[in-house]
Image (cartoon, one colour):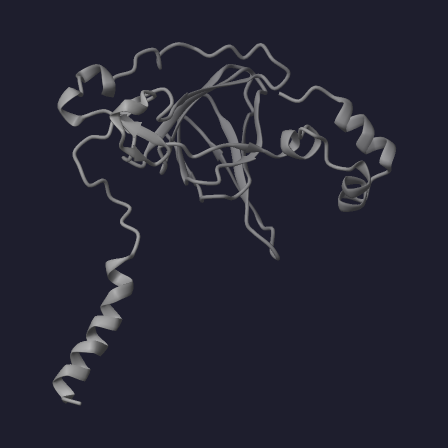
Length: 220
């Protein structure tokens, strides 16, 4: 067999995985999310509007200046700006959220399975942190003041707590159009249907009655 031909086959074989590799970048200028399936192009979980029909309103959202309602047990309000609220974010790989804290309000331990978060404090003082993965489970924390920035790596459990006697406000930006949120306590003790209390009692080394009491609570 001709050595040049063999060489060409080898190069083709090596190139094949590259040809079929995932391309994370959008392949058109806009892919405004719509619920109407007649548009027919399904990208990243959403149908796309014909780019020629896109308008300024598809990329616009107002109201992020409004304080969130923190009159709940945790004293926190999250106002998300994901592809669900701003259709023009579809395929762009970014989103954000406004987070309002009452005095001593807490954004409880949670994860974003599909995005890294970068947080900037606009008002107040926050105690924030995240926990690294097994086996170290190292807690990395920082006290933040107005203008400070902190990063929470993708998928890691993290939290924000207002340590002040006044309200606090922060803006979080995330590296996904729909980063998702898993609030740890809600997911573990408030799942539907419930996780077996025997499983949780053994996992957390708790008395089964304690687990039953936790599962009976109303999780927000």
